[in-house]
Image (cartoon, rainbow, N blue to C red):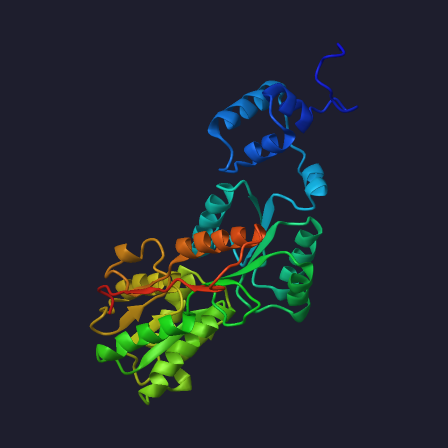
Length: 341
């Protein structure tokens, strides 16, 4: 190799300095350009990318994190990847973070506090630039890990009034209250609440339903149908058959998630139970296909994509050291009234 050839490490690996020399820019410009930071002139980005491609440069994330004391990844902990609502949320998060050159490391907790605690320990060992976690219900040890790490953190899907927490979400209990009020306003009086999974947000919906019925003097514990099994259309069908056998008969069922309600509607059609004439059926989250059911499903439209985008944007502000106000963003919700009620 000639003396004026590009310097490489002993392993033969092309370095950031090699790309900078080939592109005629500083190493920091190369780093920012390859991270996708929008502050870099597009002309320089093109030069850096061309030099990087020519040299077949592969960034070393471990070395970059060591040099900057901060990685270019954000750890995102969600309960499930099999649930459509978390997929929608995650896609919005990833899209927003990539615009500023950050990658996402995804951890799936399966609604298990011990598993979440372990995932936090593992992720924090890699010095993430930031954390996005779902909700506020976790072990004291997990919460202490977050608070003592000094890593910027934003909480998803719920809001908080605490001055030391940053959150983006909406009121699960208020949304459930409003949907129950709608059922009451249509003349329904024996309204069951059918829930699966029984995670913290489901239980908040339960509280909203209870509050509406208690205010109307119509609450009975026997109207609660709670099943800890994972939420699914199949389970919704089974629960609907069980609920319809209750005496005295019910005239409405509020399912905690649309997949349960979709399964209930399919079962009602199979059994010849007229909806909403005999019983009204409502869901939550406005999942794909709810508008195509027969009849179309009344539900709560939750702003999952907007929550993800706003939370990622807020986290980026924290990573940059900016002052963020307000610390809690309520993205709201919308009742979608369709033929099932």
